[in-house]
Length: 423
Image (cartoon, rainbow, N blue to C red; front, side):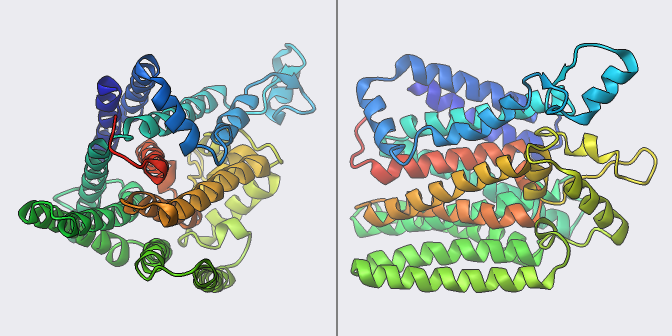
């Protein structure tokens, strides 16, 4: 598993740093590293690894492939009555076969499919690789470091644009939200180490690193990002605190259920208030102000979207049809908007179902875990943040954020069932 572990780290670090630096090949490099990690894990996996994978994915090991299957189905040639209208227009203009795919742009959808497969591969490899507790800790440190640096870049960009002029704000804001949850987990790790008579000096050093990362992320999310992003991060923090309270007070199932229900009702009230403040389609109510003309174009685009969408990854290409400015193209104002426009209600429902099932699995895994519950707790908080953030911004469309979130979920799932540090 050493090669798989190394390739996993390379995939996370390279995709994140290259994309933040503005490199065009960050996603491709991260995808190749993910493929190498999958090959190495497959070649070196033993029966114990397989059994661990089965236990970690007992919630539904086939569910995550629903999204790649939806994307792949968009590439299959179908009769023109089911295909995207662009292929019927093309046949009328230049002739050809009476078949066409659902997607409006085959190349963009293939790229989206490869990215989805890379994310699923990293999730599975992470579950296998981090069975070992020391490796799980190192992966957590890498994730918290990468996301903390992303948050710091956003801080520097907003405080002094000359220091970081090309920072993608949507990506760094999303990574900062993930970094806040991960660095809180690092602080919990340091506290547990101190409680179990590990080196106090080392525990303090780890805790201080986590605190610095959490402060940088908190400044980026709560001070320099939008209100809805801050609320999404607040939901994640509340979930971590909820799990911590239930575990520390050793609440009975009835009391834990009542407390969880109260938290769920509170979250529903806050979300209802946020949606009521907006207007227009539900998917556009939490996005930042984009102007009346752009909003009208987005509403027309969403209204024209069919139940199977226009093709994963094709938002910008299809958006040129709706943008009134010559040569301009609409950009996705949020992840949920892009998923709906690209994959329709089917893809959006599949993504939502996968996220909610993973959230529940991680939440109960954190409550049932004897030691190291901060792994699944932080992963659950990240998934909850991602769910709300997907309605408020487009940061989760970035390959770096997708790959990091896949590794975070894999780390949480693996450590929610692991009971030892054995290889």
